Length: 133
Image (cartoon, rainbow, N blue to C red):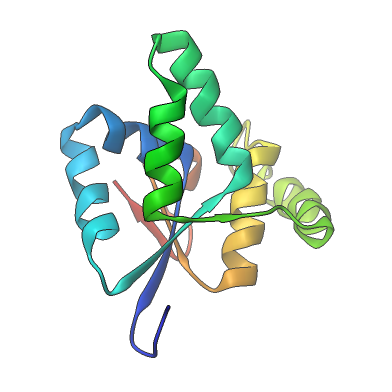
């Protein structure tokens, strides 16, 4: 369990995919995930996106799901997250064209859990508390 001084990271779909394919960006994600001092979180909405990617790429989703569950804490989306996401999406669309609801849900969870988001999604570039890979 997390103790004081540890860091919490929310891994988004983009970062998970890079991790799974073992890309250069994925190496950065791997360092974060494999650091035993870190708490790794995955919003449940990312699981659907990972499964969609696995279907498109003909990759075994059950294996990816098993890995994700083993190394991260799957976080449920709360009603509060959905409601906060609506506001976040509305605000961020003023400056980031096409900022989607899933992205807004990730930011809502980030705010609720006081963690850093790990992503390479251009929508997250230059946002506060984001490690952009």
